[in-house]
Image (cartoon, helix red, strand yellow):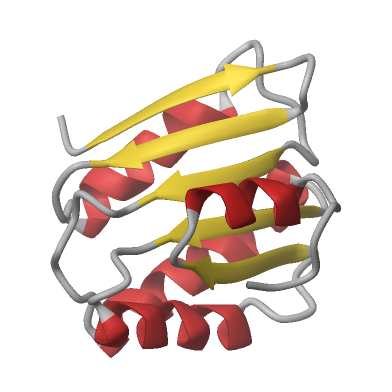
Length: 130
C-alpha cells in the first residue's frame, strides 16, 4: 500500500507514511478513510513522511490535491500539515511549497520539511520553520 496512517488522539496527531507515488484517486480514497476514522478529529496536526516516495508530483497533481484540501478544509479543521521529503529532492520540496501557496487561507497550514524531528516540532507549535 502506498499510504498508511496512524492516529494518536492524545497528541491530536496523524502520521502518514507514503512509500510510493499514489494516483489522485488512491490518495483521495486514502484521505476519505482517514477523515472517517473514528479516532480522527478536525484540527489534528498531520505529519506526512514522503521520504520513501522519490517521485516529484506534477503541477497539475499539486493543484488537484490543493483543491481537494480547500474543499475539505472544514473536515480537516484548522491545522498544521507538515510534509517531510528527502533532502535531495529539491523539486518535490518546491512542489510542496506550491501546495502551501495554493492552500493558503484554507485553515490548513501546509509546509515542507526535510527533517522529521523539525516537522514534528512545527506541528506541535514548538518551532516555526525548518
